[in-house]
Length: 580
Image (cartoon, rainbow, N blue to C red; front, side):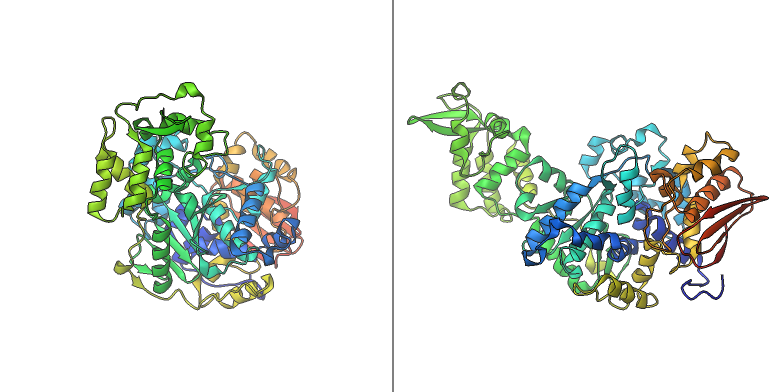
């Protein structure tokens, strides 16, 4: 492997080999153990020509003249149209707790994992116990030691889902979508990297975008501060992670902070600003409109309320749950100035003239809120509001606690006061004015002085710019899907079956390679990728078999004992010999 100017040749420690190979496969578990990888994936997407091509799409015409929020919503709609959310167990396969603990024993202990990682038993707040998290994800089909790989995808791997049966668009899991969102908001939407904070919880990943009052990305969707408390099913889904889980990682251009690490590299001032803005985003003063949204959110409470409405000068009453039912299919709402329009559409037989016993009149509670302007942070105001909630069918204490949680979510963020902050290295200093080529050049120049910049090239999968060992370690140890799928094939059938795959990589550029399971899942690969897929299958079947791969600009030759397999390649790799 000597003498090639673009092939890095370093003696890699076991720790660095593990971290760099994790940057290749990017499983949720690997990102939890090595939190630098979350931002490394974002940077890999920043370097991708696929993402920069979005700028040429007619959908983004005139984007530069739009205000930030409109630019962000344009990006959102593009992602909605082109990517589905995917979190099945079959795409990237399964592993075991024992295998992963043996791998990461020198980095983290199992008890810490149990407290903060979903795959090792963490179930968050009561919500996750109620839904039975293993059944929720389909893991109840396996023993308790089995866990999914759930690998995160680059934008190229997300695009490639269109080649997988059952998909008509690209796809990705929540970390993939969060990293894609952040990169797209910078490259296409023109949002500075400093305004983007990536957040991971044990069961979810999302971003906080520091624009206006703040925006959360939630898988493919966006949530504004106003939407956070609108009481709809979509907002309820978006609230789950921050309501029920601890934030384990916050990643930023300046570094990261992790709930289990004593040291943090994120800029303390940037983190303090983020924490304050997120808390403000999650806090909403109580108004009559917010009260109505709360009751839309807490449907089980609706049976304890009624609405008063004047019909031809006579007061009538209708159960609140009936009014909310009429919202469906109507542009009018119970919770705003269109209420009278909605109530006018309700059938007369739903109303009664006498006040319904045991129910609170929502109109009176709204009037109290408008006049008293209660502050939920003040005990006296809480007591007075609790008195308004008193009725036969409602526990006022529980109702008040639920309302406070609805209006004031306190995020469980990594505590800055207990961390030792240290520099993440030379600052990235990637600006909106830079071209793709300038960004790549900048990151290349930082590789020896900023660890995340170096890891970005491993996530980018460019073997003309990285050591081969991490990629090969990942290829030969963490690709179970192709192994399981090829079980029915004999050894002699493997090479012909692989040769029938489409002769094209999911990565367009020279030097960038897909992993074996990506080749199998998407039914295509360059000759080098096909050779590695074959090697992965043979290694599983015959662990003692001596395997080597010789690659050059236009060919890949796999030697397996006395057998020789030659594949045509268009990857333009510098001539290398890999012992597998």
